[in-house]
Image 1 (cartoon, rainbow, N blue to C red):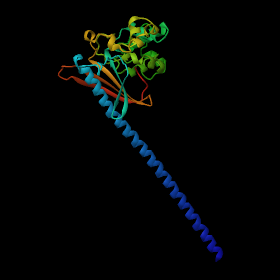
Image 2 (image 1 turned 90 degrees about the horizontal axis):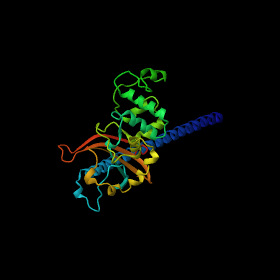
Image 3 (image 1 turned 90 degrees about the vertical axis):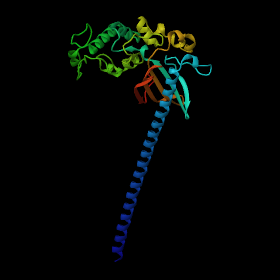
Image 4 (image 1 turned 180 degrees about the vertical axis):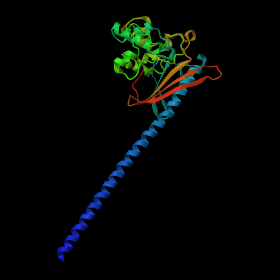
Length: 295
């Protein structure tokens, strides 16, 4: 009898240990799930908060663009759309606001072939490679199957193992440039700050253009116009805004949350600002994300 009782006690002890182990696993799983859900909820809250303060920052920038010069005093600067970083603190958040004149970028759909070639040489591509890329862009956006001298049509994309051919239509976004034969990720990131598809098709405005755009327009090297970066500091004093205006009407406004002096979440907004118009402000698009500075 004593032996049987010992066996029963041993079995009972094993069952208790298994139950305790199972309960421990369940408790650990619930704790991990709770932590994950708390983290996700915290991230969602932080994102929602950033979107709210970023919208406030965009509204502040638009208000500045709408205001006539006579309203500005020593305490409020008239913003120049040259991409200068402006710190702004709102609702306990430290933000950085940059305003760009969209017409001061090179439009992929309307830029001439020589301007595109100059842009690529300005980022130190050999002239023959730059020429081929300019031709490839021409072949991508034109509506025919005729291959430019050094360009790329459907057969060239097939030979390169691509599952698509030349679009034979306008670029719908700057990101689409990465699909053009010969454009890799590194090159794309180097020319991205100079490009747009939203200029409206008008004349390229050089007053607020970046050094890369100016190098492409002038057909010079980027090094020869890099001094413009220093000249942009305090440019509102160097430019007679009464005579040249502030570009527009389309502006790109980028808001970045600064975390320990490092960029975090970013919102980029394209907006049409027309003071005195029936609709003074039109939001064309918004983009959110964690992105590197795309000045």
